Image (cartoon, rainbow, N blue to C red; front, side, top):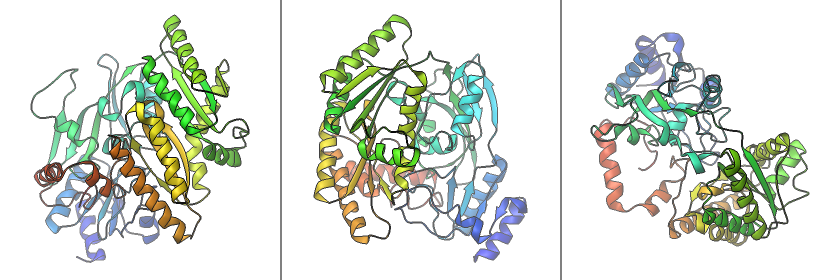
Length: 459
């Protein structure tokens, strides 16, 4: 079916104004933020207003063998939402309603296009808190967070998206609408198909509604900052915090390359004071929280921090965390960024950071480091000059070495960004052929026509 025919047929399936085929507009939906991931040309973009429209589009696609690529805000970093040739992109930007907040049961029901920070703000009005907080929270959607099992700064203590998803409404590859999970605090009826959908990157079903668990609003956090001369010394401090038994509410690492990029953009003056900044937070109330903060401070000092202190200025503390959140967009200003997302056991963070530095030297590649260091989730960012193909090849080789090192250390090739397109080779390194076949069997059972986000995660 050629594109004009497909578009005309789609406009008989859903309201015509919900189907976009203007090439200029469609172009903006073809890829996520993974600049190095390939993408194809979509035949059309559909912006549905409800589950019924999604169901009808998937049924139409199945009848005609047309690929379907679900898309949130496009903030992903692995190519998971990238278009494939001839596909229908389903964008959930118009399905952005918070349908219910239940303070008694501490849950919220939302459509997939709800922005993460918008949900958090609405919950805060009722004294509630939705913990998952990816750095993209001001722009990323709950549906996209669920599709990639997003983490964030506070997941070291509070867990990732999967820990908060109670139930889902999903359109299957057959075009059937099903509800998975439950609203109760406990439940073990049948297989955990709801949990299976979380992190499946749109390959097993199209999520149209999400029920999430909420927590009571937490106490204000105490911030501990430490400056270090090297990422390895900062890594030793991370290991020390882990060994101390304190579970911080955040423990983030930002290296000099990131600090310089943020300073060049926002003139915050951080890179004149430190090669590496380690930021810890605790939210345990009262005296116990004070003791935890002092313990983290001692860990920083004993690991060789050139300066470390408990912050008494809330604005100063927020500025430091703002620098952490700004690191990625600041680095994008320098050239195309290839983003890693490896995770290793916390005790091996120093070793993994040393191996990243080795990869940078061996492949003559600029690698900046930011990390959710408290849970071992490292984000080496490989930057190459625009148009420098030789530098790009060197960076790709460094990328592969980092993946191999993470697996060798008993880690994983992705902690929160997903496999998408960029990590398919890494997945083959990490899991056995037998386990890959289990993945394919699940995919075949839930998407028998093979139309849901084909080519992603594995081929």
